[in-house]
Length: 230
Length: 230
DNA sequence: GATGACGCTTGACATTTATCAAGCGGCCAG
DNA sequence: CTGGCCGCTTGATAAATGTCAAGCGTCATC
Image 1 (tube, rainbow over the protein chains, first blue to last red):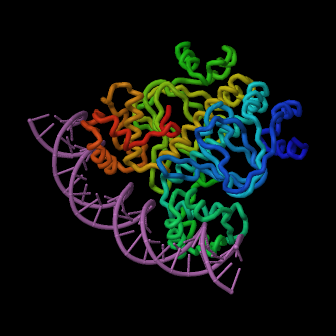
Image 2 (cartoon, rainbow over the protein chains, first blue to last red):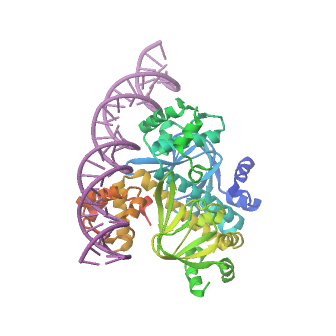
Image 3 (cartoon, rainbow over the protein chains, first blue to last red):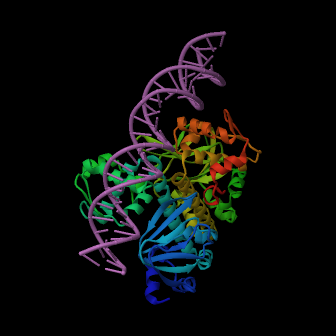
């Protein structure tokens, strides 16, 4: 555990208010691990050994039943994942795989639970982080329950446009098949959804998307503060 | 705020470890309110004034966009709801309405946030409660993303059968149209889903359902510990 | 430079789900 | 008792989405 890694952890809101001693105690036994792409990090039924901090690369959290599989969320640096599972001392509930070569800081879950018990400041940050995660899933749940596939894509593009802040010239951050899974549809259907959006100024060229009629796209997408915000 | 109401609060795991003084402080300004059926308690855009404790009746949390509406979850006594929103001091993110005449204990959200800041034991319980809520939504999200409408209904019936513990003779706890919305389908589609399940021993008579071929139903439903448990 | 794997797209078709319309039956108010 | 509302069901049809198969282009490897 190097100082540079400690600084990465410190930069996260979740750990920002921990005193140095407690942070050191929590990081004892932690290690930074490199993974190649397309590697399974854990399965949903595994016991939660570690809180993960994605330092570099990209990770997909997904679920599967009965030969079907679906992306639940994508993790980008720098962020923690599976906090809830680490805190309750049970199964991960979700599976994870790398989408790129990645560096992940692994913090023993037991250390995190101990910090929660003994460091009230940390417990408080954990509360806020968990509440944010909760609202994040609720938004995803509303999204898939209240919108059609085309609407989900349209709203996704609008969100990316705001995030990438690049005036209507987006680059998709993942392969289209992964995007399809995240948006709850098949790759074929995603292709067709893009076609459907063509009249609304959506021009596709590989992973580069141009949004040439933002107003029209918004009219179709009907974005909602309580689904798409943040 | 009567003693009997205080005892109700105490009985909830979330508040079980609070000392009496802190509990009294948090309950200051709280009140028990009675609502008739079909009343909107709050809308998703409202600021979160109160943590709610459903003492009697039934409440539906739902979301709407673009003239569509969907049930997110049902609350039954005795349980808190909108904890996450109360803790972060923002909008409710979900709307709520009573499905029956209900009694709800309203605890000022500011009191809850104060308790989180000042009572480490409470903060810790809040962490565990939020983590459980989080996994609850994740399960709902998996359910709708990985299963067809008929499978969702089949699994719902199996879960109800376990909960009601009544050997294959279930009573639906809500109107069918509400059940349909919760399962993410139209009432018409729910009717047809019940028909589809007839060969699997599902006999419908109003709100009374008999499951006469549990094994067959399970084979169809393929229940999963990480979607249906608890 | 050839080749084969792979991601994406497109077409044809099947399945799932929603929509619209009608009718049935219980239940409550007059 | 009776009329009308309302929840539920059923049928016909439309829309959304998935499946299967084929083909295309890119890219890494040989």
